[in-house]
Image 1 (cartoon, rainbow, N blue to C red):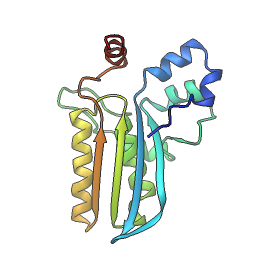
Image 2 (cartoon, rainbow, N blue to C red):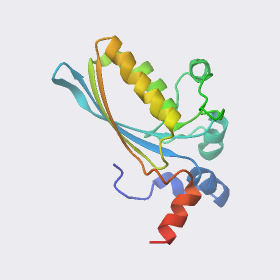
Image 3 (cartoon, helix red, strand yellow):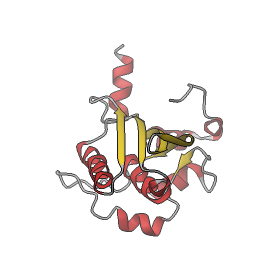
Amino acid sequence: MHNGDVFPFFQNFNRRLKDKFKGSNKLLVEMQIYFDDNPIGQIIKERYLSGEQKKIKQIFGNNLPEFFREPLNYANYDIFKTKAIDINGRTRLDDTELKFIFNFLEEHWNKGNRFVINMESTLYTCTSCQSYLVYLKELARQEGKIIDITVISHKGATSTNEIETAIENL
């Protein structure tokens, strides 16, 4: 979903910032909102980075590129994410999928009654985040809405080190 061009903001990064950026999961989202079978507006494209607010600020300062999304209301997001813990007890508080779900509910939920969402993740979408996406679909069903979600991620890509190793072994 990205055309492969180098992000212009990346040219100003020092090695430490590049490593922080590289270590973050990236989630690319394309979404079409419908009312019944009628599309509403253009396809919405959003990108998310994993990591807590202070890490994102360390990378970008106050100049988050417009195509990356962070929660607009961190106070509400902090409440929203408090119980985001996987079955192994690891916190999932700032995963890209959780940020997407929060922003979706805040910004898009009331715009239509059917949503077609395509997501592409650098890292494998963990089972807890998969569950949160299932919960979102169930919430929509209970409210008379339809959400179709397609997630593209590689099951073996659970860290950037694993991705680099896989590429080296090609």
